[in-house]
Amino acid sequence: MNNLSLTKLPFGLLELDTSGAVIRYSPAAERNSAVQADDVLGRQFFTEVVLNEQVRNFQARFQLFMEYGQSIDRFSTSFDSDEGQIKVQIMLARISKKIGNGSERLALVRIMPERGALD
Image (cartoon, rainbow, N blue to C red; front, top):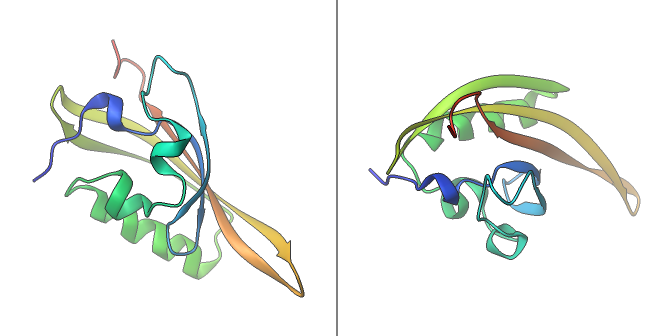
């Protein structure tokens, strides 16, 4: 199992396409994450950005969210890290953009540490 470093989690807002590729990233605060936009843009979130066994449940939940058309989903999860368990709050929100003659389904993903997780 791959352990994360707390500084490797992309805290903040990410915009993912239906395949899970990161198309936008806005870090919440530099002190919470050393991850920069260049580190994640164009990469697959679940296989290239967050390399951890526990991300599989998050990925399955994301796929169901995109497939079944929910508008919002909030949940908590945790990841093993070099610093111990990292507890995070995750929010998924569906957004659509008009592209040419159709629209593209996208998800806004917010990842924030639970209170006390960074203390």
